[in-house]
Length: 92
Image (cartoon, one colour):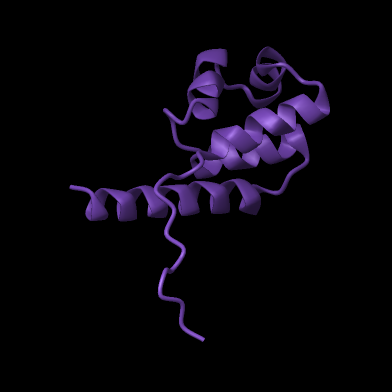
Protein backbone atom coordinates (compact mmCIF):
# COMPACT_ATOMS: atom_id res chain seq x y z
CA UNK A 1 0.00 0.00 0.00
CA UNK A 2 1.37 3.40 -0.98
CA UNK A 3 0.92 6.25 1.43
CA UNK A 4 -0.28 9.59 0.11
CA UNK A 5 1.66 11.27 2.91
CA UNK A 6 5.06 9.62 3.20
CA UNK A 7 6.99 10.13 6.40
CA UNK A 8 9.48 12.91 5.86
CA UNK A 9 10.78 14.49 9.08
CA UNK A 10 11.87 18.12 8.90
CA UNK A 11 14.70 17.72 11.40
CA UNK A 12 17.54 15.37 12.23
CA UNK A 13 18.74 14.34 15.65
CA UNK A 14 22.50 14.74 16.07
CA UNK A 15 24.34 11.67 17.37
CA UNK A 16 25.55 13.80 20.25
CA UNK A 17 22.08 13.50 21.78
CA UNK A 18 22.60 9.74 22.02
CA UNK A 19 26.02 10.38 23.53
CA UNK A 20 24.50 12.69 26.13
CA UNK A 21 21.86 10.08 27.03
CA UNK A 22 24.57 7.43 27.24
CA UNK A 23 26.63 9.56 29.61
CA UNK A 24 23.56 10.06 31.80
CA UNK A 25 22.90 6.30 31.87
CA UNK A 26 26.53 5.61 32.74
CA UNK A 27 26.63 8.41 35.34
CA UNK A 28 29.67 9.75 33.49
CA UNK A 29 30.49 13.43 33.11
CA UNK A 30 31.75 15.02 29.93
CA UNK A 31 35.06 15.60 31.72
CA UNK A 32 35.34 11.90 32.56
CA UNK A 33 34.55 10.94 28.97
CA UNK A 34 37.17 13.40 27.75
CA UNK A 35 39.72 11.84 30.08
CA UNK A 36 38.86 8.29 28.96
CA UNK A 37 38.90 9.14 25.26
CA UNK A 38 41.80 11.58 25.20
CA UNK A 39 39.55 14.20 23.60
CA UNK A 40 39.10 17.69 24.99
CA UNK A 41 36.00 18.52 27.01
CA UNK A 42 35.33 21.26 24.44
CA UNK A 43 35.31 18.67 21.65
CA UNK A 44 32.98 16.38 23.61
CA UNK A 45 30.65 19.33 24.22
CA UNK A 46 30.71 20.22 20.51
CA UNK A 47 29.75 16.63 19.60
CA UNK A 48 26.88 16.67 22.09
CA UNK A 49 25.60 19.98 20.71
CA UNK A 50 25.80 18.67 17.14
CA UNK A 51 28.56 21.12 16.22
CA UNK A 52 31.29 18.52 15.60
CA UNK A 53 30.95 15.20 13.76
CA UNK A 54 31.88 11.83 15.19
CA UNK A 55 34.83 10.74 13.05
CA UNK A 56 36.01 7.13 12.77
CA UNK A 57 38.76 7.51 15.35
CA UNK A 58 36.35 9.24 17.72
CA UNK A 59 33.84 6.40 17.29
CA UNK A 60 36.52 3.89 18.34
CA UNK A 61 37.37 5.99 21.38
CA UNK A 62 33.69 6.25 22.30
CA UNK A 63 33.32 2.48 22.01
CA UNK A 64 36.17 1.94 24.49
CA UNK A 65 34.80 4.54 26.91
CA UNK A 66 31.07 3.72 26.72
CA UNK A 67 30.92 0.08 25.66
CA UNK A 68 28.65 0.94 22.74
CA UNK A 69 30.01 -0.36 19.43
CA UNK A 70 31.97 1.82 17.04
CA UNK A 71 29.50 0.93 14.26
CA UNK A 72 26.65 2.47 16.30
CA UNK A 73 28.44 5.82 16.50
CA UNK A 74 29.42 5.64 12.82
CA UNK A 75 25.86 4.78 11.78
CA UNK A 76 24.34 7.56 13.87
CA UNK A 77 26.75 10.07 12.32
CA UNK A 78 26.22 8.77 8.79
CA UNK A 79 22.43 8.88 9.08
CA UNK A 80 22.55 12.35 10.60
CA UNK A 81 24.78 13.71 7.81
CA UNK A 82 22.62 12.05 5.14
CA UNK A 83 19.47 13.54 6.62
CA UNK A 84 21.07 16.98 6.90
CA UNK A 85 22.02 16.80 3.21
CA UNK A 86 18.46 15.83 2.22
CA UNK A 87 17.04 18.69 4.26
CA UNK A 88 19.47 21.11 2.61
CA UNK A 89 18.41 19.89 -0.85
CA UNK A 90 14.70 20.19 0.01
CA UNK A 91 15.06 23.67 1.52
CA UNK A 92 17.85 25.53 -0.30
